[in-house]
Image 1 (spheres, rainbow, N blue to C red):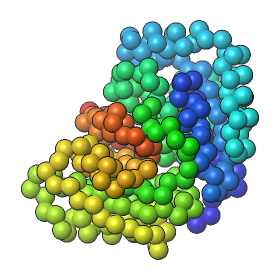
Image 2: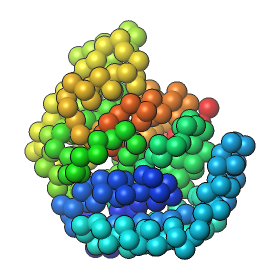
Image 3: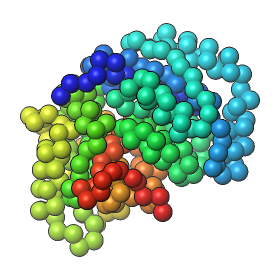
Image 4: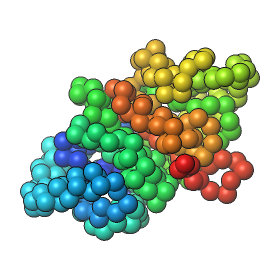
Length: 294
């Protein structure tokens, strides 16, 4: 599969505390394909936010814009690969959508500020609109992520259930990047309730192979966790496999599909010490992808 020659990695650099580490992680993941980075500062309107977030956003907008952009340009010079700085304003969804149309990213990247203490509100009011607007893969770099020098991942954990899934076009475009990492991949299947173990686990492995996300000859192992809460099972799999990146499937159904209202993503992000890659997939019975919001 080929990727567009003008592909990039788009880093949403609105949290200054997290921008540099997020950009370095994104640059390391992009390095095998020599993808350029775009550091995007979003001067967005604080719509549909909780009062606490409105106050935080208002405080952020009072920062000196010239100083912010100068800081990003200085960061661009410190990064190892080609990097440019961009700015976009307006409503969050529209600003990100316009940037995606301009820069054609393979994925978006966003860091979590250590000052952000309302992660659930942020997931519902900022992350979900970005996913809805773009349907793009999204790399999230928790503030607890290891500060060691980033490198392309060597052990990747794919956390999913046994329900069939179909990658959307943006997710399929990730395949050359994952292949370039030359990583070992583990499928983590968290068995809950009375779900039988063997067949769903084999189906999960087969679905990953059939999805086209990974190279046909990529090493692939299975990890099973029984009677665990979804987030706890994913975190246990991370610890046991020593993975340095975890992939979560974002779709309407299954415990990982209902990431947001069950706060699975929030729990994983609070405790993960590795980056989390959200990959949008479509349920086979649905014409398009739309995460649940209840």
